[in-house]
Image (cartoon, helix red, strand yellow):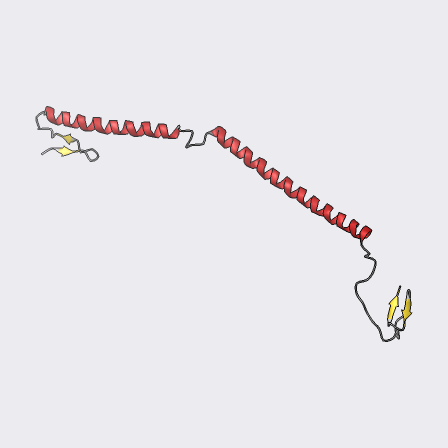
Length: 134
């Protein structure tokens, strides 16, 4: 009884067996079929790896990395510009307040029953309204 190979089950005649052409041909047909399948698989892998619609080339990667760096720098520049704009808007609002609004008055009102214990340095005590007027 012959032995068989572990992977492709090719028949291995024993040392005392006679040479059988059919066994040799069956083994060759099996080897040919397996090799053809490997060739087809390898060709498919090569075609797949060279497909530029599916895979990134080294040049594409460099371009993408450069684009990402440019976008990151642009984001940083925009952020800095927005901060400067916000600062300028704040300054313009303060100038507009100084020009167009009366912001010299005190929005807080404090009343006193008397000025005992308080030294009045500036202003005039209005007794009737119980307040200091500047």
